[in-house]
Image (cartoon, rainbow, N blue to C red):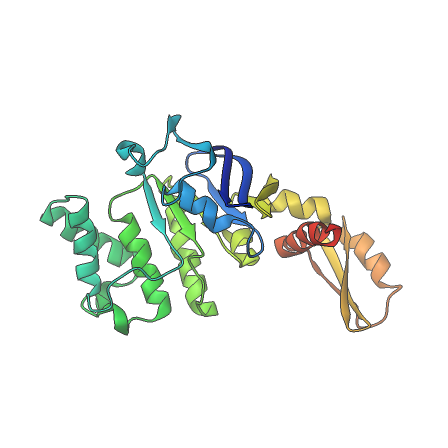
Length: 280
């Protein structure tokens, strides 16, 4: 279990994360969502001890996480937005280097590398250098590297950034498989459909503050499970309804170009975060 208690990070007069309180249960897949500058990456950086909080604490299974808490830190693996791998190393060498950093035996490194490459569909490319990998393959390799030491908690900061649609879906399938391993996952992403597809719960951040934490299904239900889109004066206007019948009844009074569809988590995000922005 992960607990963030009044987690705060200030850079001079700027507060990037403002007294964030969040609990994540063991085996849960949680998405941390927000616009640019909301504090998502800063939160991940504090959870990985790259940054130290100005105030507040992070607890792993009830124990305080610090830079010196090696037992707690070993439970974590982090996948960052950047490709943090040497370009001249082969995929196999990247995995061997990771294993040696954690003092794994050579036989265990080989066994785990074989398992993870098979898991990620990378076995046929193990001798290819990083510079010759596609963006999607690099991301998959980063997942394999993070899983090399069998972490209990995986922190994913924009794991599908820059991927094409096919590579993103392949990564989704990979991450779904992790859910069956009782791995606790915290994901930051700008792709709201990604969070809807993968996460048990989502937490919306705005200006470093927590807006809401709930399941995607309940947030969509609260807004209205059906939406009608209508473009008026070059502006898209969306209305939300609790039932299909209510939406159809309203649709019959609108112009022919009005569109009925299912509400998405992205609609919830736009409505909630847009509300914050318009209040400024």
